[in-house]
Length: 334
Image (cartoon, rainbow, N blue to C red; front, top):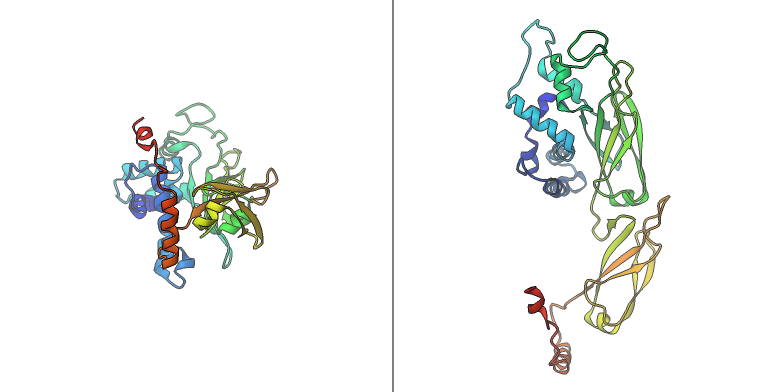
């Protein structure tokens, strides 16, 4: 992505958030739009695919604090104008070429079903250092502002965004990236949670004057699953039960992510919202093994037969006098 892209593209408008939106609002907007325009949900729709890429580019910048600060500074400095040098002048490529050299990124490869990669690149020394190197304020071996050989300077980091299917995030996978003409395989560990970052040391832009290379920083996003959620190394699922099952107790056969089933004991009197644990059947990593957590949800029937209604009315009559909201008003007033 070039510096000219940063000046011309309003990433806040792309995500539909204000310029002072916090990280949570930006992430929420991104996830909503990513689900809406995901290629898997819009197969054959070129416009949706283009929009999905645009959303990814915007989030790649705004989700990274340093990238966002530089983007805001570039937009404020440029005011949306397009800078270029006069014909025949030094650096005839103009501001766009300069910024492009600094903000070039990594791009993903892979066929159908491969992790989707979106990218951008961040400066390693901050926006002040970038402007200093552009306009002659850089540090040298002989001190600030003097001429001479440049001192060793670390290369810039390359920032990539990878979106994984839920199952791949649970089991672990790899993503191939092309950085500066090199193909780099990033290993994604099992149990990676949405929003986590993976840093590959020395895989970013080359250093200057013998300085160390920058890093490749991969932010992982996980596509939501219709049933399961990932909570650290634990897997969570909401399990519907009937009122009779919750009140009287039961044992259920519930599915696991690997296609098997486990027996889940629901004790008598289990309230809606209680989490029941099955140990050792969650995500397996090199350091830990998670659990399965099943949250009980009492299902309320929308329609009742005549006999069912009579039975419930009889139950209500037997339970008359029990105030399940006793003390609620007093606790609310504390």
